[in-house]
Image (cartoon, rainbow, N blue to C red):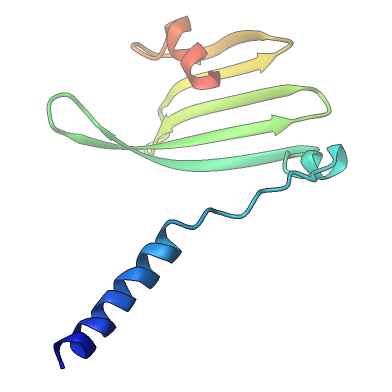
Length: 118
């Protein structure tokens, strides 16, 4: 009687270990260059982000980020602004150069713009 009652839990433990220790199937990477290109934007797109910032003093701020990507001109333009319309940073990335068009401190540093375009 004891042997039969142990048979079910032992077989259950065996099957769990068997399937838990089995290997994952081999992943095949058969992506072509044309398919890889389909993951990236082509043309001109405007992307809008809502950003919640927690300030050091404990206050919260809601910001709006607008990014314009133009693959034909090879440019990225980004604007970071408050919901009231105050532009904190307006910058453009073109030909591996970052130009800050308009900004207010502390967003006026080149390091912040480099971090934005990373």
